[in-house]
Length: 155
Image 1 (cartoon, rainbow, N blue to C red):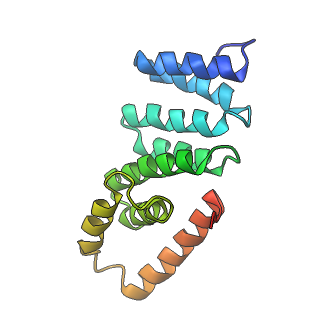
Image 2 (tube, rainbow, N blue to C red):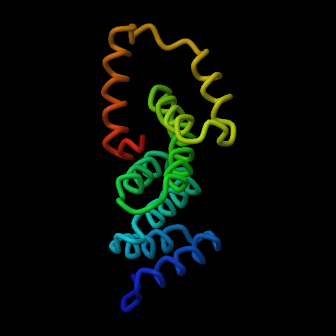
């Protein structure tokens, strides 16, 4: 761990380490930067990207969620984080959560990347028989409430 650096320096060191493929060391720098609320969103997003690069999707999801809980950051930054969160959830097969992330993006930026196509593709898939319509509705309502608390209602 590096000591004596400010958040900006930790963040910049983390970027260099991530680019060099030294993900564990980069995460350590980003964690220190995240202690500063002004860097929390960006640092946690970078931690998530490091975990994705290491194939650690669950850890990436957790980091992206921490980034979204941060009070800093623009709507544009949060949409970008929601997208990589959605992609991570998609890899994990958590389709209901994936759809919810993509739907939030579509509300904020209807033309963002390939979100419309992803929503259409995922919506057309059949869900498992073990989760009936009533269970899905209840579950999706809970997810919706959690997303609202994560990124706040901007409209």
